[in-house]
Length: 334
Image (cartoon, rainbow, N blue to C red; front, top):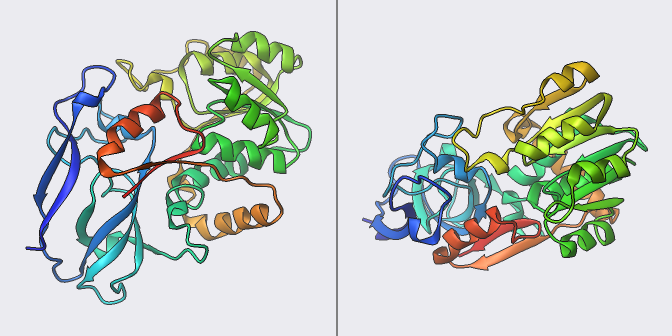
């Protein structure tokens, strides 16, 4: 035996929006690594909207997690014991499965070894990982903005949205960004360079889009779905293009996979709507990371992180993120 591990689990299947009392801290035995395995001590845990889907009972991309079982998620950790050639103790590794806990044993072949010369190893959960690759895929892989085209990005102050805003600006696009507070709006326009801001909590998004883009949107990067996506469709110019990244507004709905009610508008206006996820772009990670490094060196990329301390804080951090409390990437440091 290698000791015990602490982990966060659901107390019961969720029937509605999650609350702090729906989560519990548990311990379980941690065995020594077998042949080809390593023991990893987590250093950073990722907090992401998609995690809500594994807490649902709906069939979808992410299988439901049973109560009492460790919740899955991304993490960066250090190898403490190795029984695998090629992955020595002291190495840093990334997992997309063994988050929400402070340690785990896993086959070395299932982990990604990483190095961070600047010491910011957590970036492999954000800019250099799921967050950054998702933003890059939506902007460069799907939308491909051209100079002076207008793009609307919602949830723009979040982990993915904030990077997407800056990538679009670096290509010369005119960016309309939305978020849920004026403070975030000031950050988006004053620091990240967005050209205009919409506070979706106190403004009519459709009316503001008609005001800010009277000829229609050339592009939209949608992280929200639901009514916001329907508003985007109504605001699109003929032959516009939409990148579908997420649907956080629907994650508490009876069917988070439901489509927009005004789908026929896409036909009428010859709009291209493309769904995507980071998995389609992970093979290009070295190219993407190099692109981010170039933008940072040129002063064209700001990386913002909201950091909370301790495994016990993971449930609240997750709920806060769903409520929009974070700016940039939400992380828990162990």
